[in-house]
Amino acid sequence: MNLHEYQGKELFARYGLPVLPGQVAGSPEEARGIAVSLGGTVVIKAQVQAGGRGKAGGVKLAHSPDEAMARAREILALTIKGLPVRKVLVAKAVDIVRELYCAIVMDREKKAPLVMLSAEGGVDIEEVARTAPEKIVRFHVPLEGLRPYMARNLVRPLFPDFAQAQQAADILLRLHRVFTEGDCSLAEINPLAVTPEGKVLALDAKVVLDDNASFRHPDWENWRDPAEETPGARLAREKGLSYVRLDGDIGCIVNGAGLAMATMDLIKHYGGEPANFLDIGGSSNPEKVTAALKIITTESHVRAILFNIFGGITRGDDVANGIVASLESSPLPVPLVIRLTGTNEEKARQILKEHGLGATTSMDEAVRMVIEKAQEVVA
Ligand code: GDP
Ligand code: MN
Image (cartoon, rainbow, N blue to C red; front, side):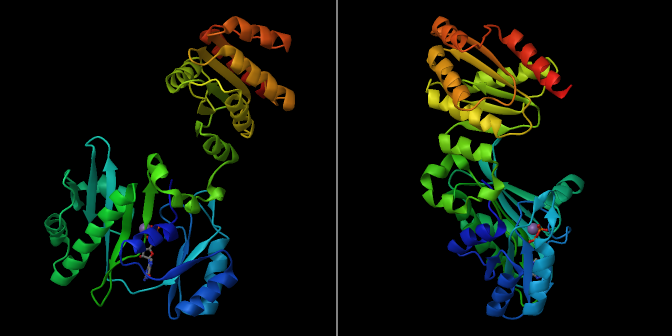
């Protein structure tokens, strides 16, 4: 799960990271009120999960409450990288003399957290990584964790001023606690800013939480932004189905992740494009079948649906009952192709037949058929 900047800063503040006070607003009037209570110059920032908001006009300074309201109105009307701005963060602003980059990301290849630091902050770090990779300091955190001396050694080359280096080392250590205790896969500060007074501050927060750890953090639910989730994705999460939306037009409902991958491969092999990955799992709960069909039919880009069931633990008759029950309660808007083989295959075929549905045993044939049907819909 990706956090908005204001949520990331909330998390940072819990760990004592130096973030400036601010609040999130959904309207220009609300933004004005926050500016009044903060006093002085404020910065208005679009809360969308995309980088480069600054360049897109989504970050603006305001020197009075009225100006804050006007800037908020402008920013709330923006769409940044396809994402409509629904909220803005109104925070105390500061003068900046330097912008650096500081992040910890999980390096899956090395199986360790990776600290990245750069004096070239503020801008796109991907750009720095491409054009001047030597300007990024990299350090894999060893199993024992990030020790204070490691943090001091890392930041020293970037901060000639001793007092600033101390602040930066402290920030890095706290960011590491955010990363480990907070179960993040990314915790990034860009810019890590230095003020004219020599204060080092986290002016931006980008946090990605590792969903595999959500069971340890019931409070994460409060951060979930329903506006960021498609109806299909929400339903899948609620029903515990693993679902990934893709851009093709063939909806796939498959039991087992391996078979789901193979199904997608075969669709591509025959020139089709899968509209999703959806694994209904190894059990044969008819409810999951119904939920899966609901998820798929919430997506407008689906032109035909393929059921691919290999019955092992999954019983074909249960799946068939699930299909029949959901078709009876809500007929499908698009053609359906069923491939079904394995446990209780005969029973399943019988149930489907009684309801006017056919099923093939060949995955090859089913895939070719569903691609054809999807094309017929377009034609
Ligand atoms: P991003 O472009 O989406 O990464 O948004 P950031 O939060 O990083 O903001 C972009 C830029 O706005 C920063 O690099 C700063 O230059 C500027 N900025 C953000 N907050 C302040 C502030 O309090 N004061 C000043 N002067 N500039 C700020
Ligand atoms: Mn930034």
